[in-house]
Image (tube, rainbow, N blue to C red; front, side):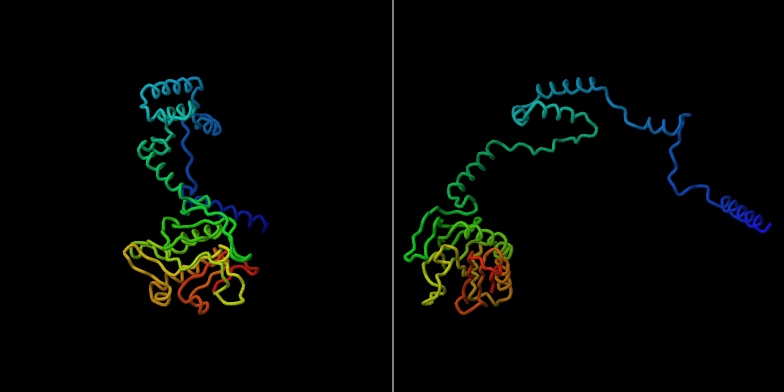
Length: 297
């Protein structure tokens, strides 16, 4: 009897909650079906109706002929194949297609010819297979002693459009690292200051000598065409930035320290004014590889 009373109470509470519940459900209301078809039939009717294949093909062919007849010569040259032409024709009437082609507008012939001429001019002076490295191929450079010399030397006069104060002799590995440092270290550090970078001051490049010109020392990487020393920079407005004068100055000193930091890893050895008394006025960069990774000081 007690169990029956409990069940009756539960039924009364449940029925009362149902009566007190709001008339509208939190779930989205299903769309009204004006037909007497089941729900599955309604969903089936909501699918888009496919166009007859023959009618669609005829429409595309008709529009293709219209495009071929009315197209100007420049547009016709841009069409690479019959398939491209048919696709563009269909895109003109398809509601899902964009109104304009995603392909860029053809450049005028004069612009193309000018760009090609500039490319040819740059290619004439390109070395190491990189138009960003302008100079000349030198080839084998013998050293006055056996430990010196360069197998395949190049003489660089400009890097990424920036002139060097003097042409620098080195191998292609060092030239490529030098260009990477100019692009990722020098240009971002200087930015638009003084109108931007105009020239890089080269203090030293290839020279058959010992390290720091010290008697009895090992042959320097300079003697192998694997090193370059940079003493400063000139900006477009004529401003001169030198390591000797600006390393500890506010502003320009920050630029130089950023360049020094970003060179580490691009080159195997990076030395600056804080390294020792031999480098107070220049950066020394070389592409020697050390067992413990890049040596930066």
